[in-house]
Length: 482
Image 1: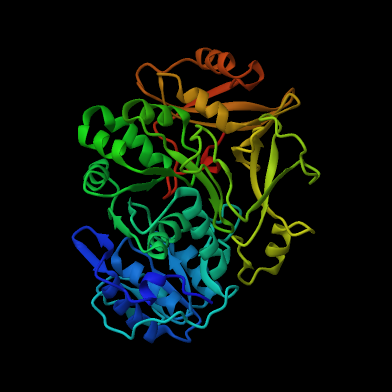
Image 2: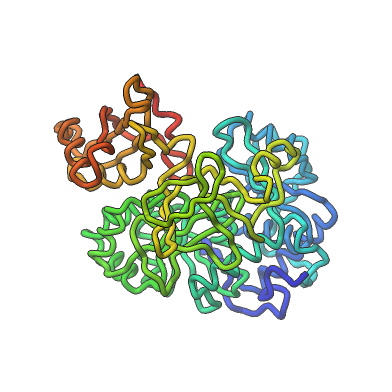
């Protein structure tokens, strides 16, 4: 197969490929360091990578891929039980880590290889791995049991990055800035492997700060990747940070993913900078499915159109495709295409259950589709689809309406059993002023006036903060009714 990273295998030059703070590597230096890693892991099968936000992680993953081996990124914040499960399931032949990095006891029995960013190995060639050979095993969050390892083939990585290049007009002239973790698809595949496949450059913040974003965007970066929590902080900081306003205004592309970006944050950023954040939709198992195009309409609340080569349909509760694209009828998203994983490692039962008889992947995400094909995700089937009074209601649109209230700082919406309605809508609110929170009736009226009376919350519960995971996603299963 052709190389995943032509800029590394076809005469790498002196252009900066990676920068983490004050540490940077040119394409030539990265090729040499990745070549050294490749020498050590060639033929090793699966190789774990202790995925800290560092150049060592990038060198490790690139070296593994160029050697034709399989990278298993490990979240450094994983608990002992979860890490033990991942290691037992993936059985890595080695673990790659930065020199001096302390590893947990669970990794004691795995041979360790220190990654030298100044290493010198043979120039990597295109390799002999085929398109359908695995590139990565990325573990899902495991909300309904132990994490499952999604086996992502090399063709899925190549296809997703090339499809995004088409949608976003992504070229070797682009300089990406982000501060995302490197143990998942967003930060690693899109945020590190994406720029390297294009021959461009990436600047990793190490730790996300609005000041870091401002510095990089005013210093030559052209693209920003973030999650909603990051964009929320950016939106709040704009009024006091003219450098941040300048940076966002001059950026070529602002992209949000991993969860829905609340409409109020969309509008706040657009009002101050004149720039719209675009959203895309993907999963560990599918990589990227849809996106707003760089030359398309960045419509708040939507994740755009299916990417080239990706098939997408909405189905009803019986699995029948929905004929209507009316912006109202809710269905589950199913996808197929070269962007999909090949299965869950050691879990043929889970793999079979994830696909329909005709080969479509069941995402578990619920959405509506506008007449022009734009997709609007309303939430997860398990936690965000509320069936109340005969209506199917997505939590996302209610959350956006609540966030439009000046007294609401954060909001989450869930359903709870109700003898009359089937489920009642419950709003979980972090008030902007804890001493004077908006009342339940006021919030219900606010939602009813913007959406419809049957979408108003029937109960309101107040919190100091919403429970979130490493990516800033609200963990709704941690919200207990009482």
